[in-house]
Length: 339
Ligand code: SF4
Image (cartoon, rainbow, N blue to C red; front, side, top):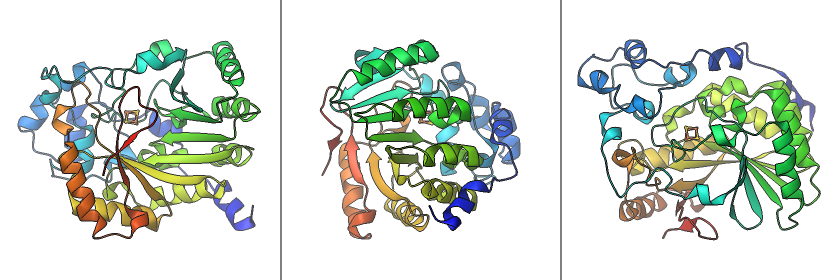
């Protein structure tokens, strides 16, 4: 690693990420006050969705929302709506049938050759469209002994070459725990790649500490970090710095977005997002149709709308900046690529 890369890793921002994580905005009223939103219908209705999924908004993320705008694309991702309580029989609490693939505590195996570990039972932000908003994290939070059993199970399957850490957000866990878990995975002889899916570099960029980066840089396995960013407005200089630190660990960085009604389901937003990701050296990888999760019907974009958008942005972007439009079908060998 070059000295320049090392210096990026070893300079921490002043704010402590744990303090930010302990001081999330959880009261809709506080969010409306911070954003100077009128206390009209939207705020009165905010408490409905909270029965199912609490409000969690990190302050650095809220700072990127535009004051006075109920339609702000970042606010829309976290604001609870009474529409979440509408009953729609075509939606499910477990649309990807993950309970079927939950083979051991904290372990899901959906695809051949790779397994997914729910490395942390919580997230720094509650995205209202989340496909795991009904996931039983309490039953999927292994202690160290259970992790050992899960890791032995992975070790006993020579077909597994990639371990994916996913949400809850793995980077919401502390450095020493992550170091322990990543090091354990790194020693599994047939595992060549560790992939981390995280929204922390976007919602709390201060999370990317020197201690975390040193752990990541020390891994023998190839490291892939998929950040989850849905709108260009989420990217500012602090996110850029976090990404720069992650790149300096030797990780390959990509982005995965969810196509969300009223948030990024227009060509202008998607083109801008791809350009801004490229500006910070992250390649747009997946554009995911929303999963059909109970309580999230108001975010759904249908397949034809998604295909039409891809056609539009293909005419405006070089091929390498056009994300793959995908859908997840439970039981499939991989994500289903559309168009
Ligand atoms: S960060 Fe990911 S897992 Fe957590 S609430 Fe958001 S979408 Fe769901």
